[in-house]
Amino acid sequence: MSTAREALEAAMGHSNPDAAMSALSGHGAAIATQDTMSQAIHDVYCGVMADHQHPSDKDREQAQKVLDALSRLSA
Image (cartoon, rainbow, N blue to C red; front, top):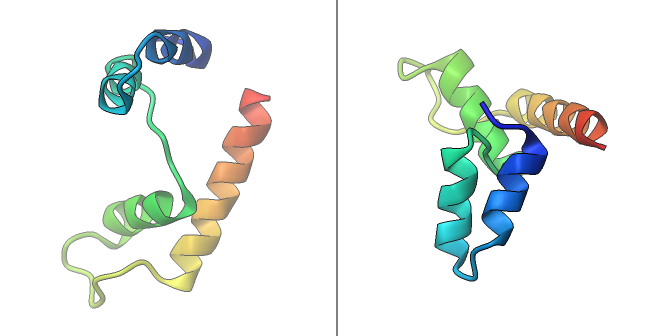
């Protein structure tokens, strides 16, 4: 697994956004926003058998906390 710095350096060499995203993914990195993280949390913890389709407010709050923690760790 690559470090975040290595993944970023690999992605920065591409002029095409799709190629940059592919390079990040290839190094085990992902780009997340509160929306995408909320959906991921919903998918993992609520699962396909959930009684609701979309992330809840709790999912969004948890997503923001995870993103905040990742930001602190990568600073």
